[in-house]
Length: 123
Image 1 (spheres, rainbow, N blue to C red):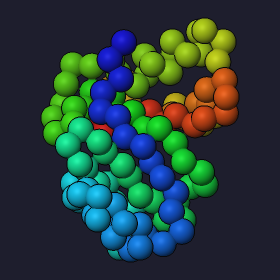
Image 2: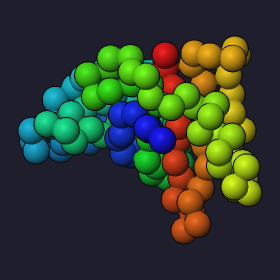
Image 3: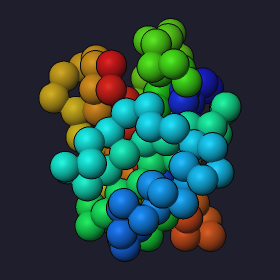
Image 4: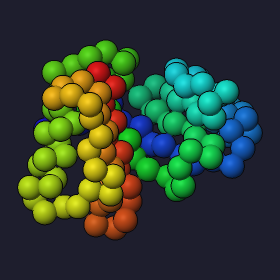
């Protein structure tokens, strides 16, 4: 199963202060919108999302069918990933949200230790 691009999504108290901190470590903005309280930063293969007031806690984010350069891939569709987890008996924290049989969709699940994983397919 190919899960696509990976990043860590951090819930931050002060977006501007957090951006300054991570830029000090050499991270640069690759996407996002500060006016909407979120930004994605990258340093080599390391990618982090900073989100202010959007969700509580930190999570791991996977972007199925998308690589690190935001190119579409032939990876595993988010619907298939959700189905595999449900078939294995795992309950989704946020059920699959998708308008069509293909294309964008997302869901959330907790691992056995309570860590949140977001599967967010953009293509």
